[in-house]
Length: 174
Image (cartoon, rainbow, N blue to C red; front, side, top):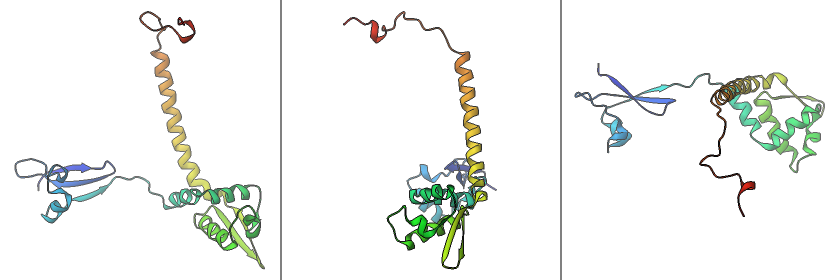
């Protein structure tokens, strides 16, 4: 079995077999290109290195990407509201508001129930849990990185000298 060479994107790698003389048959380095390499029988194996794919997280962020839906979430943060009460803050039809509400419901961020002729919406705190965990992990990671950077800068801080440097702007001759 020939050796394999990893090429392309770091998250999705393509493996191409090595040539008989040991050279990699990386189609990017060939004038043939990927399509020709695939037609020639050098079929790659696609390796997906993506970790922890979460459709609910994607749906939450997709729903929150729209400013109208974010405003609806803000409004529902003050308390439950009917569809017509939600529509008061926007210049759109009730049908348009219902479409936004259905996207938020599909993402699990809100719940609605119909009592008689009135549909009432409320936030679903459990729907924000995935996004909150994802954001918390990134916050902790960046805080740790910034703390280490601060410690490194503190450890390597030197006393500034003006020898060979321009004087500060307030000391320059005019």
